[in-house]
Length: 458
Ligand code: PMP
Image 1 (cartoon, rainbow, N blue to C red):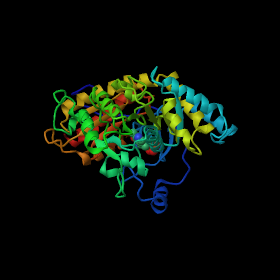
Image 2: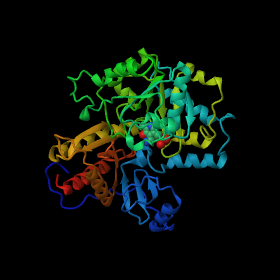
Image 3: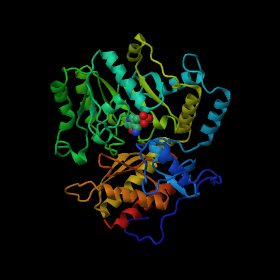
Image 4: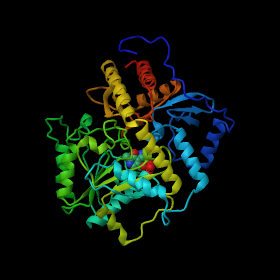
């Protein structure tokens, strides 16, 4: 619907390609009670007053136990890259499951070697980023990358960014820089957090481009003051996902990489959210910034819902790890690798990246229109199908509108739309559907947001 027109009826979720099967399992109430009794209370639950139970998914849609259909515009937290239960992924993985489920990488299997070759082929030409080591998650991939950088350089200190999320293990938590995700155990030893390129809330109180990218240049100062003057490496997300889709100015990473390399460090791009075409214009997030990292870590979209992560680097960097035994039982197993091969075939064969570019561009343009009408929207940012809408109570003070973000999530869920939240205060709406959405889905998505924001009257 165009700007200014008044809607008469609520937006309707577009029809799914298939109907859900009748659900005959335990009720939502039973499931919730069991979860409360037998699962850790530390587990994060969205829609706290009425947690959602999802029992089936097909491409960009999911269903709850009542058969209510939703457009999944959070994609299992940017993980469902090509669609829930994509038919060709399902049939290839089912076949592999029935053939050989597990053996480990102590034996050869064609799928792991083939996938290593395919990943190398996706890296920038001439980058030398050629060899991969697989893990079960993004956290493990980042742990391994940091360990590798430390081994390779013989140095310890690491630079990460404030507002970053890199995982929840004790060492990945050290890289993560949000008080909300850090427990009061000793952490961050040897990790120094630099300022992100977060222009909407510039950590230096400056404005781009007059700022001359002082946030990025300060990395050199940080290294000189806080470390022995040399570092093992630097890790960053090309666009910060959990941090609220924070998208840096184009020059930011070029400046930081130069400072880090001057101090002998390796640069790691955490592509857990930005990789596999999600930013639309490029296959990898870092390619949008004209830099080439020394290591790339990935997870989430690589497996479309299957536990899988990877670290890709240059052979001479990986060779450092041969001094000891590095082993991971499940990583690189035949089922995982078949899933990864099938997902990559779909990404390439069905134009997922182009969908991210075109539909993401459409959604972003419509969100920008909403921003003109609703002061609650402080900033619209992101690329492709990784978009963020930062909500503020007052455009001058930029007071985070966190409860409003929760209300919008509740209201859009009622309309049949699932979205996410991010940022330190949870006041940024995150939009990241599987890369198979149609124009009807994109229209529905923005119409729902408009209705929810409009209902708040701001
Ligand atoms: N890096 C980034 C950028 C992430 O967003 C996440 C997960 N949100 C991780 C690493 C950790 O991945 P996992 O949950 O698979 O351990």
